[in-house]
Length: 247
Length: 247
DNA sequence: CGGAGCCTTGAGATTTATCAAGGGTAGTGG
DNA sequence: CCACTACCCTTGATAAATCTCAAGGCTCCG
Image (tube, rainbow over the protein chains, first blue to last red):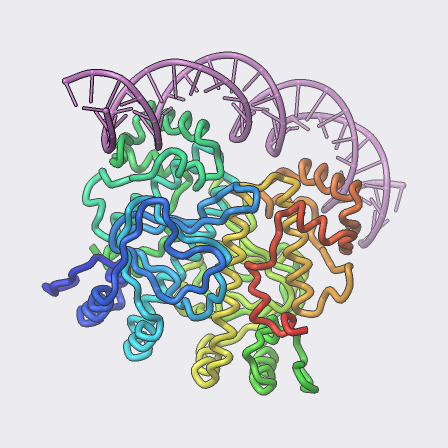
């Protein structure tokens, strides 16, 4: 589908169905310019900082998070391999939240003007960036709905579903098993629950043979039923604009 | 600050500090082209629909919302007078959520290509649209943090704070009193709580002399203390890019 | 005058949090 | 090779926040 091009990376953008093979190569080339490793639990961009780069996640998992003065912390979204974030970093000014690594990560730092220039010259790339933003918005909306109206059990199931579909899109979940390197404490911060309660709910999902999760490996045993538990529909990921939708 | 221009509307965009007076007039002119009235509780754009216009709220309050198959409903964000939403509606495809009116509303429907053309010709307008998106993202993030880690009382206080600052930006809250035409049931859908519990928490805030709220009118009696209760900081509204920041 | 919609109150049930402790495992240094 | 530490997962008991169900009252409008 992407042709025989020798792409070195697996950007999410490559999944966007409007791109030509040549567009993918252009994006791929950007990612070689400047890379950075981040240790687990370290910030990629801190609150209050003025960010200078557009970031592409090459390896590892990160998150956006918000921390209140009293120390309470909430994850706002997951940043998975292939993701890019803050494509229009020029408008950001001071960060109103932090971006951190959950595992060891490698990210590509792209100079915003270079990406903008690329988008100006190649309408399809501009559209791919729009699409990516649109999906990010959709994901935020679904998290609001998750926290606002789903039970603990449903929230956790939803997160598993989301990760599964997102990783599949970037070719990191060929079968029913994918990486899931978060701790239960991370999961608690993502779902607005306590670690203790997450533990109990995860065990429930295991007992019902919906998932297996040990170490960094997650297996979805019954995707249909898990989606049903979570009231998950992938609509908000807008996969219809994706090459995967064709296959 | 906006000069002596005869602007007919009060778009949020006018607050963006990068605009010239002439830019404001151009935007203002867009809003005359095509307007639509929406009855309270009706959809402006329904889930599953393919939206055709960029919308500007001229009067009344609306919301984005997500409804699960079983009927549970969560508000995702408030749409207040002056707001514009889905400025890049071209990428949307099928709506993954609904947009509805909470009160009677008047919206301007702008043809996306016309707005895009304007943004292409006037860099400042493009930046204003970016800024608006950026604030929308920030608001979604803050709602996630609200639902994930704040108590019922804090969430309600936060919503009052947010509305107060947003309305002030568009000149609809000159003093301590502003419109707040939601029902307690709406507030419950926004905060992920039950109407009964919202009622009790609102009474608590009233008893503590933090707010007065009766009918459609909200008065903030002690803004500092209310912000403190809510752990509210306006950072996510990015008012620093705003003419209000100067004054 | 009657109804509809909204707000309010009470009592009891449920979900989730809190506190506290124990166990497994992997890595580290002696 | 063993002990030790750190980190994570697990379990139990109890407490707190929020929900559910039910009913009554107010106000506005036809």
